[in-house]
Structure formats: structure tokens, C-alpha cells
Length: 414
Image 1 (spheres, one colour):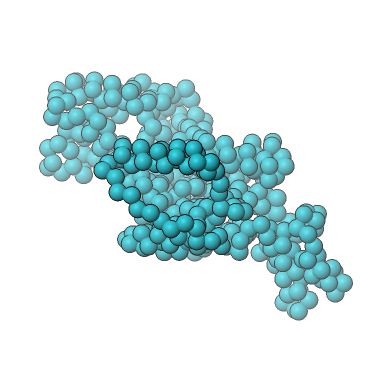
Image 2: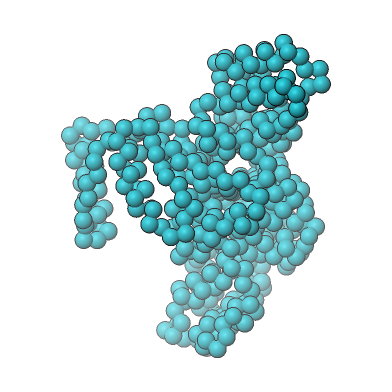
């Protein structure tokens, strides 16, 4: 690459950096890195939703423009000088210029964004509509929860694994009633094996993609687990008869569908050129396998999460998914978002001191450009109810004294 070409590439990247200067350097790097596996370790208050939304908007609008090294064949010194000067312009004046560098933009319908709640999915769509200036484009993006995405796939292809397009979803009450009926049919006393405990064991088995047969084999000589295996087997048979799935089935059966029918897997893997997963620290084994299958064609899988905020182990989440991401995808890039826009210096110092003791963490240190703020006070409460009352009383007293409890740290990009 000659000097003029190098200057062209540098000027182009400087223009993009200028246009996205509302983001800090690591946030910009996360937005511009669109190809290949990417792990974004995002600390609390570090603007991860902003990064997720801007990254999707960027790849739809500009593709891989930042890292593309294509140079015009008729490049001149005057053109390079023009671009070098443009990098000093106001960011709002760079929109048309950025379009000169578009490289392989991604159609909205080829983007999949998976979240954990419908509220988060709707927020992403709303913010994307604002970022793209096109509400119809944001609607074309597949944005939803793991369960809603899987149901779209099952409604279309579920007949291959024995479900109709009108299959029913059982809620917790439906599950308990069916389990009770199964246990009664098998002559198993609920006092010996409580329904709630059986339901949890079956749910955890499905998180791990364990069929009734696999569960029975794993139970060995454990009498209690062998009884659960019998219940699990009958429970699944009854679900099939009713053309029904429980919530754990929705993901597990979709994984089995994609795994056992390569043509179906290929359809979605070809469709989704980019797959983005939020709150990755709270995923379980079945969710890991699902995203790996959906991203298997292009391997443009971006996951964002915080290994210091995994709280759903009791629901089957495995922190290993985020800790070992670069082992599962050995060419993965890792970006840490450590600048915090929500808290003061004293709060972050305390938080860093606490989470430093977490075992197996990837490691990051939150920091802020805000001041240190008030010193932290420790209040010991007898139980969670006393803690809640103390917090409510404190807020009420501050409001009565005229404090603005809605005040936040300055200029947050979160």
C-alpha cells in the first residue's frame, strides 16, 4: 500500500471517528467491529444498549466501511487532502460524506437481535428507528426474546419434529397440573417428590438439552432421580399428545430442529448475516447452542454481557458461556467497556473492590470522568424487609427535604 493509499484509509477512519465522537474509543471500536465473533464485556452503566443499537444501525447503513481497505483506482492527492480536512468538520455535517465509504451494508431483515425481555426488544426497535430514521427498516430486523424467536421458527417448521403451527404453550400452572396428573398415573406421592422440585429438575435438564432418555441414563442408581426420569418421560409424551410445549421446550425443541434438520438450520444461518445477543452472562447451554447454530454460516456473532452480573444460575444460566466465549470461538475479538456514566468515583471504587473477589472473572475495572461524590455509608439491616424499609424511608426523607432524586451523572451515553 503506497503512502497516498495509507493516507486515504487513515482519513476515512478519522472521519468515522469524528462522526461517532459521542462514543468513547472502546464503544466506537465495538460499533465498527462487525465481522467475526465478538465478545463485549460491558460493565454496569457503560452504555451497552447504546453500543448495541448503534452497531446494528452502523452495519445496516455503512456495512464494514471503517475497516474496509478498498482504495479508489483514480485516487488523487487533492481527494486525500479533501478527506483529511473533512475530519475536522462538525460531526453533523459528515452524513453525506460517510455514504461515500459504504461497503457491503447489511439489509435489516438479515439482522437478528436476541434479548431476554420483550421490553428490551421493543426498546431496541424504538431506538433503531430513531437511529436509522426509518421505522419500517427497524421492523424488518428480527429483534425479540429467545422464546419469541424460537416460536417463529417452530411455527414454520415444527411439523418436522411433531408439532403443528397451532401448538399450545403451557404456562407454569399448566405444567404443574400435567405433572400432578403424570405422578398420579405413575403412583408417585407428591409428599415424597414435591411437584415444584420435579418441575425444577426437568427444567434444568431441558436447559442442558437432556431428553428423558438421557436424563434416565444420567440418573444411574439414584432412586429419586430415576423416579423423576419416569415422570419426565410421561410428561413429554403427554405434551406431545396435546401438541403443546412448555417454556423450556421452546428453546430445546428449536435446537433439536436445527441440529437434526440441516436444511432448516441452513435456511436461518444463511438468512442471519449478523447475530447479536444481549445479557449473554445469563444464557444457558441450550441458548448457547441455539445462537451458535444460527450464526454458523457467517460466524458474525456478537455477544454483550457482564461476567460480574450473572445472577440467574438458579434458573440454569451458566457463566461459562461468557467466560469461555473465546475458547468456543478462538478467533473472537474481545472489547471491554469500562467507562461508567452512571455512578460517582467512590461508588465505583467500592464496586471494583467487591467484584475483584469474584472467581473466574475476565477482569475489568470500571472508571468514571465524574467526581468522587459523597462517601459511601454502610447500613446493616436485619433482613431484606428491613433493608427495603430503610431505602424507602431514606428516599421519602430526601424528597421531603427537597432533594432531586432523579439527578444522574452528567452526559450519559447509556
